[in-house]
Amino acid sequence: MMGAARDREALWPSVTAYVLTLGFALVLYSAPSSVGGLPDLTPSWPLIVLFIWSVRRPWFVSPPVILLVGLLQDLISGGVLGVWALAYLAAFALARPRSEEGSADFGPLVVRFAILCAIAYALSWGAGSAAIGAWAGVAPLITEAIMTILVFPVLGWLFARRKDRSAMFNSGRGG
Image (cartoon, rainbow, N blue to C red; front, side, top):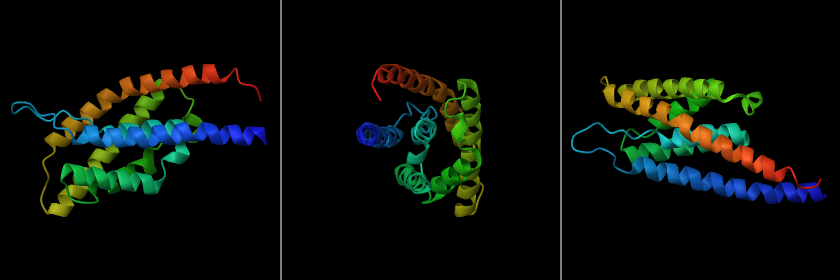
């Protein structure tokens, strides 16, 4: 009985962190990052956060959450409603980390993220092109995908270090 209460107490900080990091990722994504005519170099913060949480707590990243985050990203970006939602749902269905990969080496997770990112961006380009009835510009999406893939290892490594520290500190608890 004591273990169930402790598990419930340990869940709320994770839920709070999950909601805050997703909200912060969406705010960061909406911030302008283009300077003086240079291309926009904003990575897809929401995709990075969803992937990291799908490794840490897979049950947090359910299809309705992925759909909601994709729709919010569509609203923020001013794009066609549903494009990112569809792209994220399909990408996570095809390349989501499996439960046995949660404790896998970091390298394979980076490769898995790059695959998921490539699928999401290819699908968003295809869905966006279909929605507007013409070929969408591919250069901005490629730039954003590359930035997203390059930023992920840094954030993933920081999150993995945090996870290792908390596992070390939590290992001293009884029960």
